[in-house]
Length: 94
Ligand SMILES: [Zn+2]
Image 1 (tube, rainbow, N blue to C red):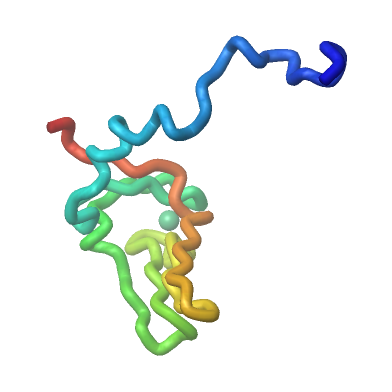
Image 2 (image 1 turned 180 degrees about the horizontal axis):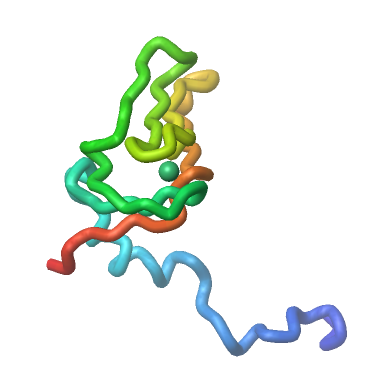
């Protein structure tokens, strides 16, 4: 590869696999995690949000503004989680 083809910040980062240990903190029951709505900015426990199970898949809505926080659906044998409506997840450090 020509040096001009290399990413300009090749020495500034690791690959995503290096995040594995830090992400283990999120391998818990996330219903107690606090999530911040990307639409209205309110923060509440995930378990306090509004779950709709009659949509294709499951849809979780913000308890303050009712915007969609996340969707969980089965798509061709894969479980797909879409979290466009959540700005931030916060769990207590272990
Ligand atoms: Zn909201």
